[in-house]
Each structure stands twice: as C-alpha cells, then as structure tokens.
Amino acid sequence: MGSLVLFLVLACSGKDDSVGSESDTDTDSDTDTDTDTDSDTDSDTDTDSDTDTDTDTDTDTDSDTDSDTDTDTDTDTGPPPSCDALDLKDCAKRADCAVMEANPILADSKGRYCVDYGTSTGVGCVDAKIICLSIESWGASPKAPADCFLFPSSCQPSGWVDCKSDMETIDGC
Image 1 (tube, rainbow, N blue to C red):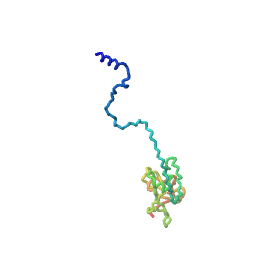
Image 2: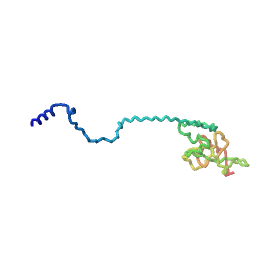
Image 3: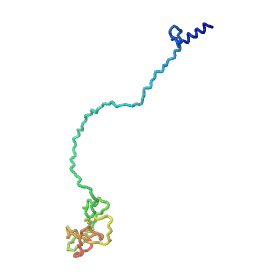
Image 4: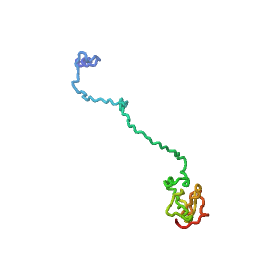
C-alpha cells in the first residue's frame, strides 16, 4: 500500500499532466456541419442605384394652329342681368325670362288702323314669373313711338308707352 500512496502523491502534486504522462484525447468526431449564418441585422440601408434616364426625344410635329379669335369678355362678377335688359336672342336662352310678343297695329288701305293678328313679333323680354292681367293693351317702344303694338295682356316691355289714344281700330286687317 505504500506504493499506492506514493502514486497518489505524485498524481496530485500539481505537475503538468501533459508532459510525460498519458494523454487523454477525445476521439469523438462530432462537428457542426450547419453552414448557415444569420447576417440580417435589420439595418436596412437599401438604396436605389437605378440611373436610367429618359432618352425619348420625340417632338410634336403637329402644325395645326388655333385660328379662333373669340375672347370671353364676360367677367362673371355678379348676378345675371335682369330679363328686361336682354335682347330677344339672349332672352330666349334663359329659363327665368320670357320673350314678350305682340301684334303690330297697321293702317289699312282706307287709313283705318287694324291689328295684324297673323304676325306675332317678339318685342321685348320680361321675367318669366311676371303676373299679367288678361286684358289687351297697346304700347310702343320709346325708340319708335309711331310703331304701335297690341299686347295680349296688360304686360309690356319696360319703358314702353301707351299708343292707343288717337287710334281707332277695326278688327284684324
């Protein structure tokens, strides 16, 4: 038993085991064959290095020119003009206005005045919602007071004057 104690003393003496002693090597050959590496660090710094430029040099060779010289002088800065300020053409275009028609009063071959019921003429413009009495009236434009007209109602264009005072009429011409 004495040699066993000596052996133990030598084994625990702090000597380097690798020198002059048995080597204990691991014969296990386990190796990691997984070659994936995770290189995503989520620091996205993608940049667009696209340097394409548009080299299209097409030009418009259309030589048509607009020779329309119409200009819009309507400044649309307020409400539309009143119906009585419109000419007959513009009056007919507006739904809130009505062309006022009348029959001319003419002198017949004997010098008597008669109404030409066969000719109805647009003579002015009024508000389409105007209320008129159902009585005939006579009127002339201040621009042509000798041209008298018979209106089918009490309504006449703004500014027109009475013209019946000296005219006696017979029925239609």
